[in-house]
Length: 254
Image 1 (cartoon, rainbow, N blue to C red):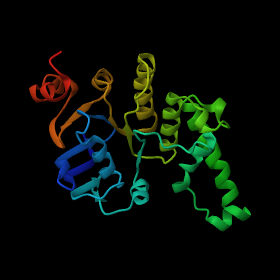
Image 2 (image 1 turned 180 degrees about the vertical axis):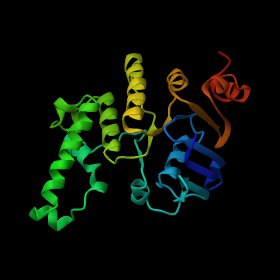
Image 3 (image 1 turned 90 degrees about the vertical axis):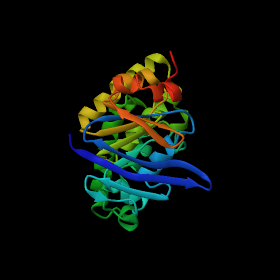
């Protein structure tokens, strides 16, 4: 398979703490790639490094063959990388529709003045952005609540809305940080089907951090396991499940 994202010698220090320790891995195009490990293993730090939210201590990151680790966050987004967050970051006072439209900003050419005064291409882009946002809300099952404020949605609905906003960026790679957090077993099963549907519909590569092991094992093509900032396993789910180091550090004897 073709690699779409590569990290080489990825390292991040916080004072004397090495949160991510010299990690090298590659993610293949169109795969669903899982990232698991104990709390504090460095999973979200790894996401933050990939998306440019924090600077690396040592890193070489590539999307396809283009090195990008010195780019700013919005520049990385234009390369085709979008994410959701462990702690949901929606605009609570804005409607669901407005939250998704915000995700379209990288694909519009209108500036402040053209937008305020309705000068082309602003009116046409506004219509296109709204239509695209409505389509994404329909995909996540929230089309009938498009005008409701995001703060009024349930936790699971906010998760889906955040995914819709990330998809509005039209990414090649979608990073999901604990998408099943707070969901009941039925919702987790639906989420697994939904992630597969999104991957297939948009031809995406999906990387997810998740603590619900059965979901990860049943969903992911490959799984990387972190422990104390180090990569201790990277393989197909069946192989990772039986890895003694993974069992000791994370899965347990059961």
